[in-house]
Image 1 (cartoon, rainbow, N blue to C red):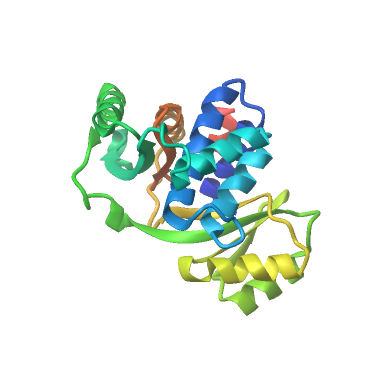
Image 2: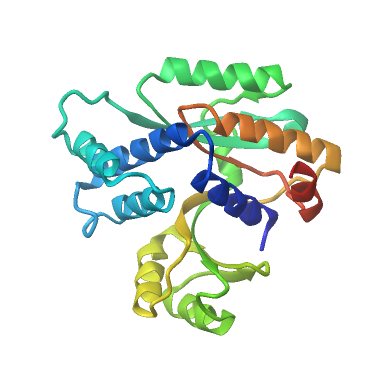
Length: 249
C-alpha cells in the first residue's frame, strides 16, 4: 500500500480518539450538511450522505448531531449558516503541491488562514488550476485484513472495474475510477465485506521524493493545515515512506 494510504489510515484511526473531538465532529457535521444539500436527506438514495454518516458513526458522533446536520443540509433548519465547498490549491515548502478540500461559511477567513500558514512555513497559495492538474480523483475502500482475503477482494475489484488491490499487512485497499464507486460499494456489500473507510480522494499522478528531514517537515505542515477548522482534507504529491511515517510518530 502506498505511503499516502497508510498515512490516511493512521489519521482515520486518530480521528476516532482525537482529544479535539469537538473539532472532529464539526468537520463531520459539515460534510453531512453538504452531502444532504447536494443529494437529499435520504442516505439510501444519496451515497455521499451514506458515506458521511458512516464516517460520523465510526468517530462515535451522536445520532442527534447527525440528524441535526442532515436537517441543516436539507433546509429544515432555517437558522443554519450557509456552507460552501471549495478546493484551494497551493504549494508547501520544497515545491510540494497541495490541494485543500474546504467547507466554510466564510471563504475570506478560510483563504486567509490557509495563506498565513503556508507563507509562514515557506509555501504559497496557487491560482485555480495551478496544482489540480497533477492529481486524479479516485474511489477508495480500506478493508481490515480480517474482513476478507486478498483473493476475495481481487474478485470484487475485477468484477466492479476497480484498478488495483493494495496490501500493507493490516489493511487492503481497493482503488478505482470515481465512476465505479457505487459498483464497488454494492459488490462489497453483496459479499458481506465491511470497509473501515471509503470515499473519494485526489491521488497524485506522480509523487516527489524528498529526504527524510524535509519529508517530515512537510507532513507536519500538512497536519497543521488539516487542523484548520474549515479544512476537511489535504492532498499532496509528497512521497511518504515507511521511514517518514515512523519518524513523524
